[in-house]
Amino acid sequence: MNVIPDSPWAAAGLDAISGRVLEHLVGVPSAEVTTVAEAAEISPRRAEEALRRLEGALLVIRLEGRPMRWAAGPPRSSLGAVLARRRAQLATAEGILERLQEAYDAASGPRAAHLIEVLEHEEEVSARYTQLLKQSEVEVLHLAKPPYLTGTEASSGEPGVVTGVGLRSVYETDGFTDAVSLETALQGTARGGELRLASRLPVKLVLFDRTAALLPVHSDRPEAGSLVVHSPALVEALAALFESVWAGATPVSLESRDDWPVPGGANVPDGPRGPAGPDVPRVDERTREILRLMATGLKDESIARVLKVSRRTVQKHVTDAGNALGAKTRFQIALRAAGQGWLGPERRTGG
Image 1 (cartoon, rainbow, N blue to C red):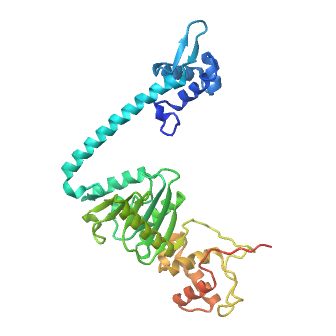
Image 2 (cartoon, one colour; image 1 turned 30 degrees about the vertical axis):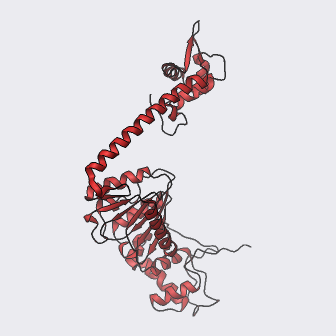
Image 3 (cartoon, rainbow, N blue to C red; image 1 turned 180 degrees about the vertical axis):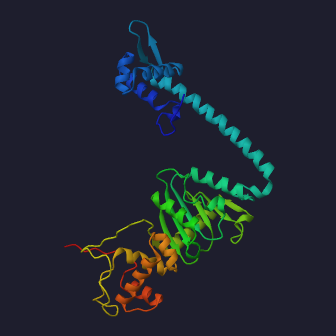
């Protein structure tokens, strides 16, 4: 019997169609196959297959007569017996789990304690990373910095993560320039993930549902192995570290946009109007995005790759912003842009 994991009937070992058929039968004295098919919105053939599966599970019975009719047994006794068998099977599986864990601990020695796993090889790290990713149900948190391991870092766009799992990543600015990290970040944000940049990260880190953490043994030599931390106290501390870094990092949007209009139809600053002050023009969203990235320390070429525009476009927006702010250096531009509120989200006024 093919059981769909997401079906509410999966715990009883039933597929979704069999569950619908059973739900109909418990509400009527008996029913023909055609009536069951119509109620469950399936074909008569699939209805008969479901009925035979339920009969095999001792949940329904066939009644003598023509045409043949089907009836459900008392759910508390019939379905209750099925659930009792499932509980017994789970208890057996849990016993096997404990024996396997004891054998694993004996073979691994003191290094692989319950609170920390030591992964010594790159292939082992990559496989364990993918496994933890697929097991995540709530949120994956990621601090990414060079040097990168091809096997694991290339996967940090979370291709194996379950739909609905939150993704938050902070990349170190100096490492956010190569094609792998950019493509990885694009994959993550395409799935609804959030991305930020920071000039310096304290450690490479991935947190899975705040129950496990993956980090390298040596931050400068990721190929030397990694640790999987299960200790609740250590994971909580690492999660607090992530949140601290996240709060101080710069939000970045990697959406590719050919045209970023602003209210009023202006797509470029209105031109130089002297030093920063009340008459500084409203900045358009493209310039705002470029200035945010520039403020994190990214060079023009990296900004162009992130936003999928030409380097000349980046330089033009930076120059226009400098003219509008009366600033000459990149530092002055970033400083005055921050003072004007250009580095935050656009504030819209009613009216």
